[in-house]
Image (cartoon, rainbow, N blue to C red; front, top):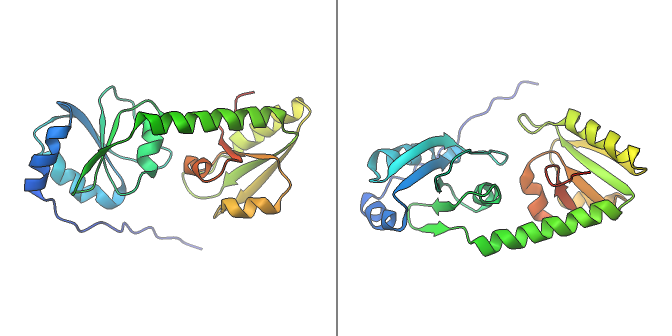
Length: 201
């Protein structure tokens, strides 16, 4: 079956007066990132903002942006922002009405939760490994390698492959904890899902 992907762009126009007011909260140099729905708005901001722009790129849930500059994220919600902040970046979210900085305390809380999951992983004997078949998220080879590593340590490891992954559905299986090789945002939805980059053996 052929699949056609169509961008669903946000048609919101940039409020230039509001931008002038809000950009006072930003540092002199920024990196602009955007989710695809906000591409047009991000391009308008890049042209209009008085700050020095160190870089400009689209961001996905699994994106890694290598920059020493704070990131101005043009998006709605906090998913992409949290992912970028967990990589050590200072992140601001712009939604045309406000600029909000991701609180470092919030990131510390998430890191502590990840550490707790890691300790649970070490003490667990029955581990599930999540694999997505979505384009850009499929990491079957990584999952197979993780499975091999776990089995060498005497643990039972099973790979679960799915298109749409619902964390609530994982409760139907007897795994003690899950290692996620798909979208990293899944780990934010459950205290039993740890992302593969945290699952060191």
